[in-house]
Image 1 (spheres, rainbow, N blue to C red):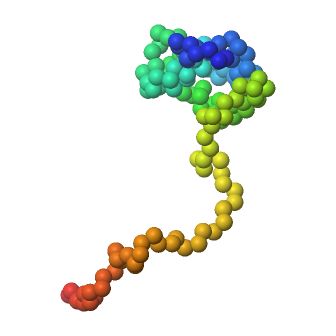
Image 2: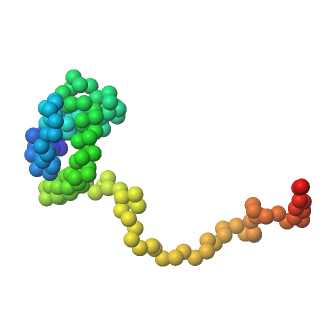
Image 3: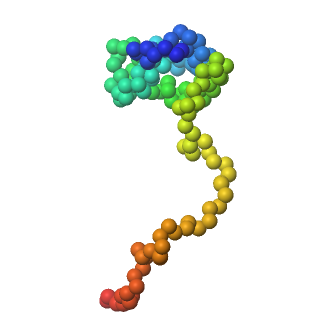
Length: 150
């Protein structure tokens, strides 16, 4: 799992053995047509698009991953089935059991974890200036009159 490949969208046998059991079983085929693209190939196509940033519709057919739309639909179906959350938890558990989690690069903020309780209320902000600052919303000059336009 830890070796970086020259083609990171190719799924190793070791990683595939972890992912495959998490994938939902495909339902019966409703109509005749092309054979279903194998899940492993579709996953490689998904990883290729995510790694390269290419648009789904421009995924090269020559790579053998199926069409971009096939990969996109598979990604959406797996997301709806909760595959990615379960895979994330499985990989964290695997790394934790081997003591390979590197907390030096961990980041957490409100976009990842909901802050359930607010912190203590802050008092009014104290000024660091010696005197009062000029107001930017009001003026010390007389108010302008409001004339009615008819």
